[in-house]
Length: 258
Image (tube, rainbow, N blue to C red; front, side, top):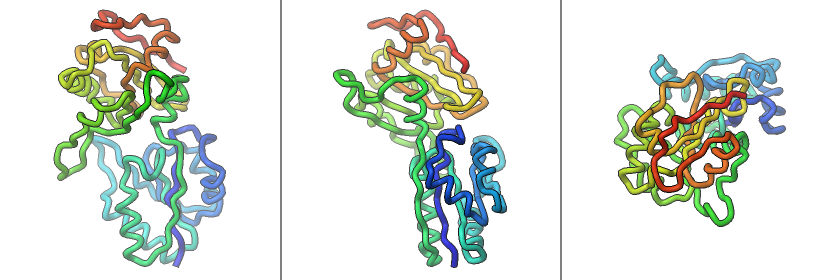
């Protein structure tokens, strides 16, 4: 019986992979990987067979039960099996279900953490999520729900935190902004959007909740995190965007490409 490693591939850039993750990939016999894993990260698994089990919104995706079965069958036939997941395996993924299925089959597992998208976004913006005197609390959430799940009650947690980072939220930017304003967040609250953080196609933009509520966000080519809070006012200064302190902005946000 082999061992299954749930490995975090990080936010995108291959050189943000941990040393442990690179070492395990080099010894892997089989790699079951997410859709957004960088091709150069896969090249580290020099002797592995690859199985694409990625899921993309609005596209045909691998069923979770198929992934469980494939992991179990691979572990019964090979020594080292890697389940390569974007970001960190334990953040907004199906890692717990996969770990439970493997445990029920008597298969040994190990989790290797990766850099999650919220931290990658903070890094590329050069903005601390917990800046002294401005933000002492951070909430990482997603408004998206899976098939058959009830509506996610994300709003109370978002309203209670000083800084909020929303995953898988780019296409729902306007809806999110309207919900936050309706819950009491000032329309002048800064919002930073980061698409494809750490990759060559990375895009950053800064606006306000009020402007986002009116303009909305078109569907992006890559994954987007929506970052909300006063700490991101400095990001607007860096991009030379004047945000209001107590009124909705009349200026559409500007985008900066790497």
